[in-house]
Length: 156
Image 1: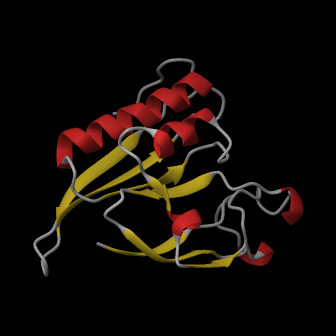
Image 2: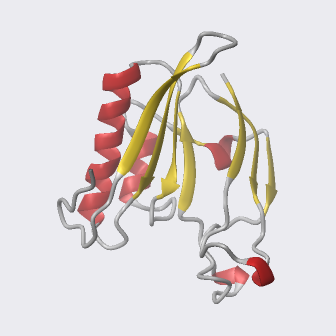
């Protein structure tokens, strides 16, 4: 169920699930979200809510948070996620190997590449090793989204 809280202008959601790896028996959590594009307080509070839910559901076990955060790495919401007492790492910044472009939002290729920003992230808890991270460049003839995907090869 989505909600429009704090200073948000749109209903937003976060979906999460707790998994058990069949091969190793390890428990981990995956979260996907889409933060509000206007409300700064909504984005900060959404970040805190996700952190609380991870602690509540899996405690100190591995977790991965993905989504369109509608902010850059200079924002309060990003800082809330990466400097909280429950620190999460930006997969793109901590990957052993990074390939592709350095932005995710291109507005259906209407923004020149040099002006595009990275507003989509993959965050991981400290137990997760980020082996590779890639943001493939958009192909203007075959756009399915106004964002490029971000891919990561993770190990825990």
